[in-house]
Length: 74
Image 1 (cartoon, one colour):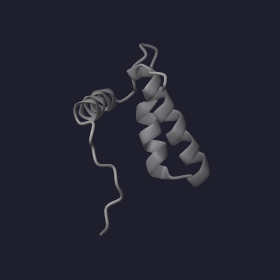
Image 2 (image 1 turned 90 degrees about the horizontal axis):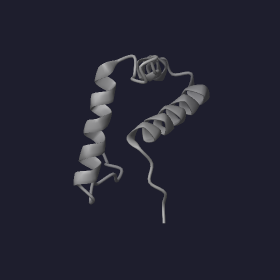
Image 3 (image 1 turned 45 degrees about the horizontal axis):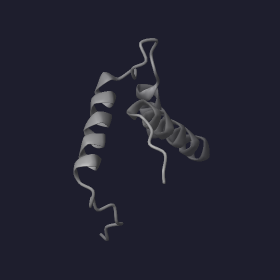
C-alpha cells in the first residue's frame, strides 16, 4: 500500500523533481518556473497562481481516477 502525502508534501516533491530536471538540462523555462514555485516565509509559492493551479490539478486528479496520461501521437 502506498503512503499518502499532503498537498504540501506533494508540491515539495514536484519541486524537487523539476529541480533535478533543471540540473540535468539547464532549461531557462524550468528555472523561471522554479523561481515562481519557490516558497516565501509564509510557506506559499512566490507566484500565488501556482498554488491555485496546483490545487486545481490535485482536484482534477482525484475526481477522475481514469485520467488518461498515455502518450499522445502527433
